[in-house]
Length: 355
Ligand SMILES: *[C@@H]1O[C@H](CO)[C@@H](O)[C@H](O)[C@H]1NC(C)=O
Image 1 (tube, rainbow, N blue to C red):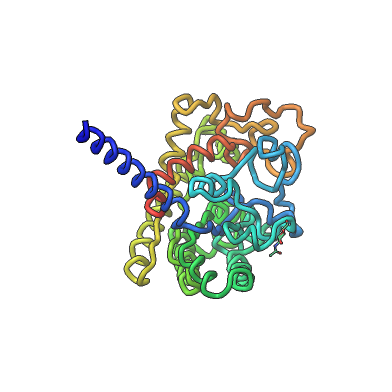
Image 2: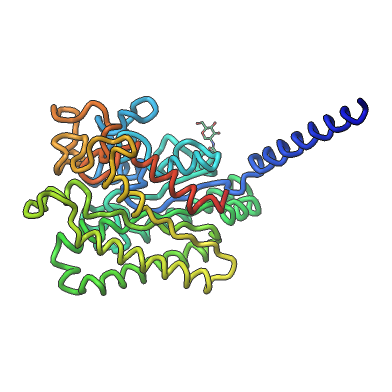
């Protein structure tokens, strides 16, 4: 009898111990903040505050977001970094740095400097007069000063050191710039243009490192030849994905991976990971029904063939009623449901090491 009682106690204390350990890992969150740089894939409304036509702060954008609010996210709901923030036990969304409804108390656990339409190349951000990457870094420096005032020097430094920094951009450098305007394509072959962008990406990571960042996720390109807008132009190919664009994405992702390996060797104490959405994204496009989708080739908004931004508005009678059946929300951006699946995959397979 006594022995059984002791065994029961031991069992209970083991359970308590395990629960305490779980609690400690939750409270002493290893990632106190998510800090984001990039394009429309992770913009949460910065472009609302600058003069550009690359906007989405009107219905039906955001119709499945909390309160049905069109925030400036290019989706019907949340974008990947919102889901990632939630997965790390932080806020269920990452607010935009230029959004006046938030202040440094909010930004202390997450902030995005991303701007729809931007790229690694400043010539890309010039196309739609959006925030270039170098300017996002300037805003980040300003943010660090505010964080020091808010938390004190030591705590701010520690926060930056432990925060997960994420980047998501590059698609626009190819689709909005290289393949749409003669400038860069006259200067560079596609291979050399990729190397030019990789050079910018490398310097950017080194800048973040110099500013105290240690945990960094470098985002890869999606299968950009499968975006509905690109499919629409592929009339000769039966509106299938444009394989040459997908091949560029694969090649560029290979170079980003190589860059990740070399920077991890070069920069002491950095933990740089490559978050590659390509394979999971491609799987969803090739087998939509396995993921609960019905439509892969066209988007929910309007005709689904070419509309985004102002062309995707509440007056369009063709917009679908249930976005969860679609992989793409507008001709260039995934639905919330697709964003959720891709984010879960990246968290589980790459970012879990920071949890
Ligand atoms: C931020 O805004 C909230 C109200 O939304 C306010 O309570 C808080 O004091 C503000 N924090 C700072 C540091 O300004």
